[in-house]
Image (cartoon, rainbow, N blue to C red; front, side, top):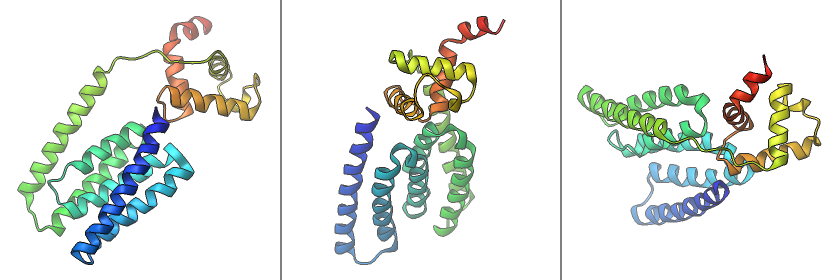
Length: 209
């Protein structure tokens, strides 16, 4: 499912780039349109080469650029930042700090005062709170694993280091973990292992006694 969505995003961005080129021909040279075309053009090769690994980088860059040129009251950027956080939770605070800096730059460029800043930040806090609530209410689903994938994760949980897993060859281990990761909507092998350990917490607790 994740792979299909990534491929769909390539098609959408390609069409978006064509639309922006049409905008450029119609409206004449505008730096913001050039930047949008450049962002679309950068997204496709980055996504094709690094696949989902590129998204936590490309998404926030896209969001920060949109905010600067679309004005302070455009919350599309903040929603994209939320998607980025969901893709890479380790960078949550960095994303939010850079967003705050970006908002400040946008307010200065558009000659807007403190009232506009307060309105924007309060709306972002509200959106962020809703995001946290919604994801906290999301029911936890059991991992969908093939027997070989479960065996690899069980061994990895025991030996602590992925390189120490000996049940399969190095390449096979990574191929099987990638398949399990995509099937279970995990952005990294570490996230997959964490979910596996959480699901079988009682088993590991018993084994440690």
